[in-house]
Every structure is written in C-alpha cells, then in structure tokens.
Image (cartoon, rainbow, N blue to C red; front, side):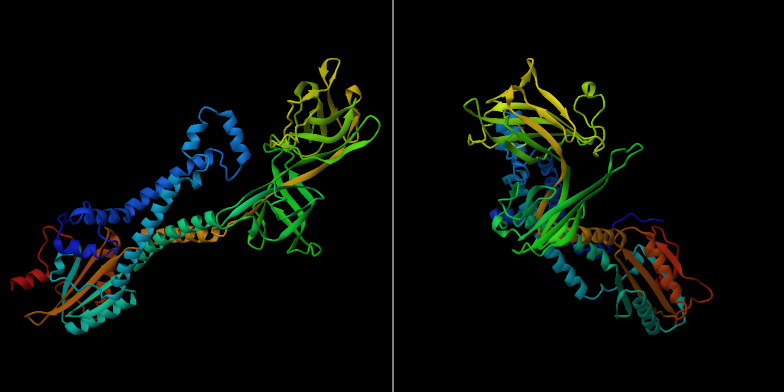
Length: 565
C-alpha cells in the first residue's frame, strides 16, 4: 500500500537530493535591505530565468517580421514610405532596431545576470555535496519509501563490509560507519542540470559576443569580375562596436563561372538542384597567388575569420547602346534581379554618358525584363519566364530619355528607374516596347540610336560574414541538449544497508532506499542488492526478505518482531 503522508525525515533527506538553492516567496528581513535580498533571490531563480528566456524569444519576433536597419536599410526606407502613418510609432518603439533597442537589451542583460546568479551558488552547493559523505542512515529505516529486511546467521560487521563492496561495484558513493552503509548515486542528474544552466549562459554569452564583435557585408559579382574585401567594394556593410570596416579580413576572389542545374520534369520541375560558384581567391595583399575554390549553398568558403556564403543567383544581360551616328556610349553586362522561381528578372540600364541630343544634354534609361525561357505566346502572357534555365532567353525593353537625376545628390536604387525627369519614347503614340533575342538589335525612336542585345552572363551574390560567437553558441546548444538528457533520464537515489545483532543471536539485515522522484527503478535496484547480499548474509530458512514500498498498515516483519521482543 502507498503511504501519502509526508514525514519530516523524508522531507529533509529528499531536499538534500538537489543542489538547487532554496527560494523564498516573500521578502526576507526588514526594510530596504530585505527587499533587495528578496529581489535578488527572485531574479536568480530558475523560474524567473525561464520567464526571461521566454520574453527574449517573444521580443525577437518583431525583428524577423519588420525590416531592420542593421540588415537592409533600403528595405526599411521602402517600408516606411509604404506605411507613413504607423512609422512614427514604430520608430519610438525602436522596432526598426529591435536587437539593439533598450527594451531588448534590458531583457538580455537581466537574463545574463539571472543565469549567472543561478549558476554560481548552485555550483558551489553541488561541490559541497560532492565533498561530503553520503548522509548517514536514518534511525528508523522502516520509514523510507522502499524497505526490505530479513534475519541471517552471518556476522553483522561482515555483512556491512560486503554491502559496502557491492554498492561500490554498482557505482555508488558509499561510506561505512556506525554499523551501517550509506550510499548515493545519480550525480549525473545534477551535473546535467548544471550543464544545462551553463549552456544557457554560454548561449546567451555567445550571442552577446556575436552582437558586439560581428559584421557582415553583401556583394553581387558578375562572371569574369572580381571582388576585394573592402568597404568600397561591398554593396552594403553592417559592423558592430568591436568590428568595423578597419577589421575586415584581407582577401579577394574572382568569379570564373557559375553552375546552375534544375529539375526538368515532375512536380518539382524548375527546382534548383545545384548552385556552385567557381572562384579563384587570394589572401593578403598579393592577388597574384590564386587558389581555386567552389562556394555552394550552405557550404561557405572560410578565409581567416570570415565566411563567404552564396546567397543568390541571376542573370546579367549584355547590352550595347550606340548613338545615331554609331558612337558606342554604353556596353557591358547589367545585373537583373529575379522576381519569381522561374527567374523572371527586372532591371534598369542607365546610360549616363549618352551626350547631347538636339543641343541638350541627354541621358537614356532602359527599363525591362530578362526572361531565361520566354513564353512562346508573349503577346498574351506578357514578360514571364517558364523555366529558370536559359532554354529560350529574351530581353524585353522600354526606353526613356531625359535626366536620370543621378547627380541630384539623392541616393538611388540602381535596380529602379526614376522617371520624374524623363520622357518615355513612343511609336505612333504608344510606348515603345521590344522583345529581343541574343544578337538582335533595336533602333530607338526619334533618332536616339540603337540597342543591341549581345547575350547574357550569370551573376552570384555573396554575404561575407564575421561572427566569432557562433562556435560558443553552438557548443552551448549542444551541451544544453546533453545536460537536459542527463537531468531527465538520470535518477538521484540513496540506499542504506544496516546489519545489527539481535538479542537472540541473529543478525537483522535492513535495506532501504530513497529517490528524489517516484520511480520503480529504486525498488528494482534495492531488490538486486538484497539478492547480492544473500551470498554473504543468506536469509534463515524460516523467512525470506520482506519488501515494502511506503506501507501504511504493514504486516509484522523482522524489525517489528525484534521490537516486541
């Protein structure tokens, strides 16, 4: 039968099975000092640490839903322009800089302090438990949740010594003294708890370190072109307090080619199967000593303390623009940005050095689409690509003339055309639009010259990242999982064995166990130890070991019989 009554001895012993500091639900002491002590205890409790960890995860949600200045400032400006009404509220709440905001930093700092304050006393207390001997056997072992007893003719001291050896072989920390053996096992449970705490601390510290000493930049490179890791060549750069543009690793690379393969049939037709950028890179200032390398998705190139990730791919149509007299005013590839899974791409070709037209300085802008596999019925479907590979490439263009406003002092998006100071070229009153195949040309209206679609090249976009805290955070995450496994599946337990001589010349052998949580394992282990002891302390023929699990109304067993005698 189960005994649900709480016994003082059991409570005291069970409490010492954990190294967690005791918590107070109300302020201790009097006055300000008492309140400060109580606040510190609450802050350093595991309950508050878990609450702060939950708040931190919730606080990070706006950072993934709202554009961030640290990631893409242009996207932030675009979002603000589209949501002018709510933008002031978001700015006051620092929602465009979530991870550096005051409220996010406050939660982060409190979590850091809470974990530190929780780990230090818990570790110190656990070290004390390890240095101390297992608790001595209680005076009345029958009060333990699991209990067994029998009489034997063996010598009591010999039985205690044998029990000590059996428990040591089973991995228990055992102590023989005062006519009994006290043993304890399952310290890996508390080690797992502490490891989990330390892992959370390492995880928070790793992310903090990464936030203070990390930086990243982006660069789009067209085939045949190169890149040097400097801020002047980066398309964008985001540094931190301890990592600025002066700390960039010295290296560079040239993009020799790009391999893109797609599935050509089935439900996943058009899905990417291989993206590989073929490069030659150098380190330091000597760009003549080149090393071949490949960069694939999720397989970055590591150079020094930086990693170069492949994050995007597209096409750059090669266009030549000539004036009416045949003068070449523009020639080269221009990157177009994909808009869908089939790489229907949009882009702008800005001819800043067109020169004069009819005595006035003029600039040209070509706005259009690049279609890797153009639809055969273009007039009905419009500028849409049917497949991401270049099975039937086409370039769709419209032309504008006037002032590109590139010298106005206002930042411009190179992939968009500002038409405020420009006029669209027309034919018979309709916008002039043309679809070109590679090698084809287009004579512009109003004697503006001609445009030739020479072909296309591929481009790849890269992110150069320096994050020194990632290894610490990853180690913390792995150790946290291991610690959680240990704390969940290892049971802390104690077993006592006492052999005492009775008045009738026999030896009473008692075995009792206590576990921190209810489990059948402690009863099974106690039974195995009792069986092991039968070799040194066999039960008398008229009785066998009697096992009880927290009995409420026990039948008479050897210990009761001795007390009656």
